[in-house]
Length: 189
Length: 197
Image (cartoon, rainbow over all chains, first blue to last red; front, top):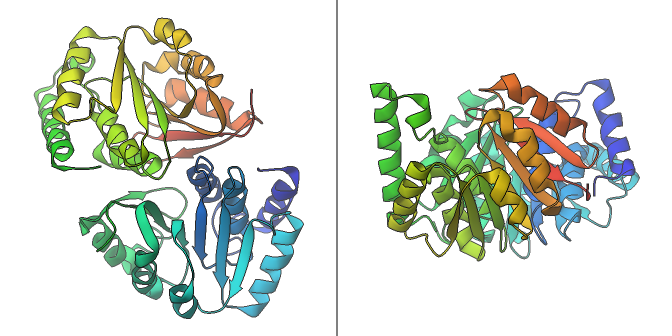
């Protein structure tokens, strides 16, 4: 649900500067993520780079509609604190859980499989993070990577690798800072 | 599944579309199919969903129906496609059969304003790719055939901002929806249903 509590926190976070880095993604990217997740039943989401929780709120509000959950990884303790406050205020603590730590260490240890992975981390880690998460994805899973247009010079290699991979269908969606949307077609790479 | 049969038909339709544009075939006679990247995007939207029931308004010769059908087939979904033009209906049937998707994708032949009100099903995704002046009425006709969590996807909202900017504006102002314009290819308006109308 996108209820008034969740909307209230989103509006507060957007108020100062409704663009990154004040919020982790622009509002249109938030809406897009919400639309992508909302139709899925029991959608298990992994967010690599939770920030202060702005994108997490969109993801969790979408997942909650049909019984999904979000696990979000954030390394910075101060940002993690802000994440907890914002998620609590949005009433989403039952849906979204924070894992504090470095995504490169934490991701391999995560249990279970994911239906959607949102990557919004430092450019240089995208490829490694994708490789770490790949064994946890079944057919039909989606990987969404942010900033592929705004940081094209650093992320073009990530995009090219996904679009050349015969086990995926991958397309660049020019919403917000550019999202690479990759659907998993078969289990193994 | 995006198997070899599906990929072969998609590639042929892309080549035919490019040729028609090159030869300057009149707009109303062309397939006017979505761009390949929009096809991939539609595939990405539906492939993760369980038992995804798709309504496509404007099937044309089947290019987008094939992307949608290949996507929903992973987890037991289905596509119902509406098309009125007899020449396109004929091509649609041949293309969908050649792609091996006749079990997944079904065509309803006729004017959507007549056929749509007769359909009793509930849909998870509604893809609108029809005459631009008809979008608003088609949306209204499909609105009671969806539940919270369903998604409307309307094509051409940027390429045909006149008249479709009004469509986007109305969706974005509707408190029962959350709606965003995705500037991919000709522009897609993506509207999630939050509550019953």
